[in-house]
Structure formats: structure tokens, C-alpha cells
Length: 138
Image 1 (cartoon, rainbow, N blue to C red):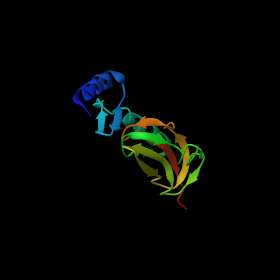
Image 2 (cartoon, rainbow, N blue to C red; image 1 turned 135 degrees about the vertical axis):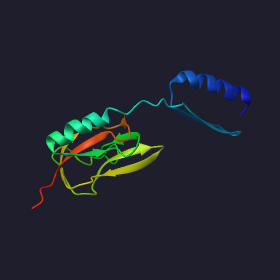
Image 3 (tube, rainbow, N blue to C red; image 1 turned 90 degrees about the vertical axis):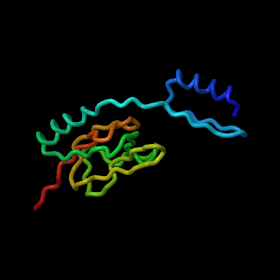
Image 4 (cartoon, helix red, strand yellow; image 1 turned 30 degrees about the horizontal axis):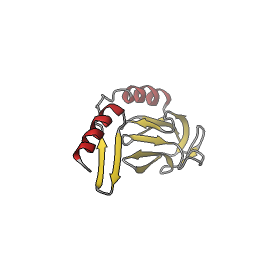
């Protein structure tokens, strides 16, 4: 790629609002990534404090930043819904980060009481995704 074309791409990309741009041609390839602004992640903590102690439910937290998908693929039903009984280790959603699909599993057995995440939305590390009412121990 000639330098004039790269400079034009950089100028356009800076004003485009895109997060990533990948371009390739016979002479090579280039990937541009916009810098990410870091915002404090204070919202999940109050949500965690408000929901878990007052209801006795166990929160399932996002292990990383990424896009949350509630189903294994677009045409499939969601992994879980409110009222679903699950076992520890059952998949509850997928977080896509850097084109890698990371399965989030239930940390405990119980019943899903609330789904905080929406399909296809970005979540931060530590965001409450689901609440699970623990299975009664007999």
C-alpha cells in the first residue's frame, strides 16, 4: 500500500466512529483500531450489592469485556431463560472478545431468577449477567 493511501485511511478512520478497520490488497494488509477510553466500572458493584444480599440470589458475573450472546448462534434458542433449572457448569451465555467465543457457565446449581444482560450488547468485566436462586440443600 502506498503511504498516501494509508494517510487517507487514517484521516477517514479517525472521523468514522469505527472501532476497527481491516483492509488488504495485493501489496499488503493493514488493521486500524481506535483507542478505547477507559471509564470507571462502578455500576456493577452497586447492582451486585443491591440484588444478591437482598434476594439471596447468586449473581453470575461477566469474566471479561466483550459482546454478550444469550444463545449459541442466531437461530438457536437462548441457553437459559427466567425459571430455567441449571446445574453448576451449564452454559448460560457466550462472551465474544477479540473474535473469540468464551462460554460463561453457571457457578452453582439452581434456578435462573433474572437475566440482566441483553443479547448482542457489550458488557464490562464484573457486570452482573444473571441471578441464580441456589438449589436447596437437603
